[in-house]
Image (tube, rainbow, N blue to C red; front, side, top):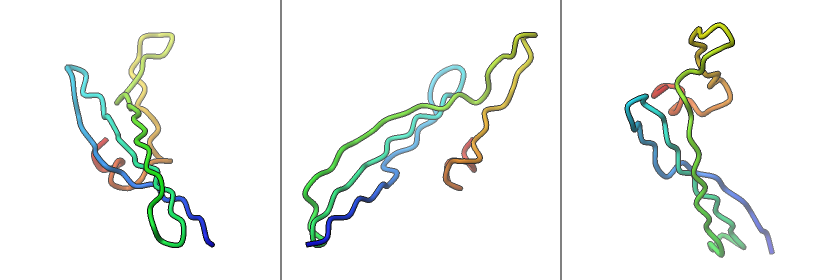
Length: 72
């Protein structure tokens, strides 16, 4: 009886005036290769933020997948 957990990107969207990147990830739990649970998790990335001097600072996306990095 092997239980495994997988994470897959279900959807990536660029939305809004400031071009936020919305990411929907599915977390899939399988038992002996049969899916027993699926949960969708959504999160958002800003393309940049402002520092204390009101200068734009690019968001660090180095920890994201290559697909998300390419979009950002």
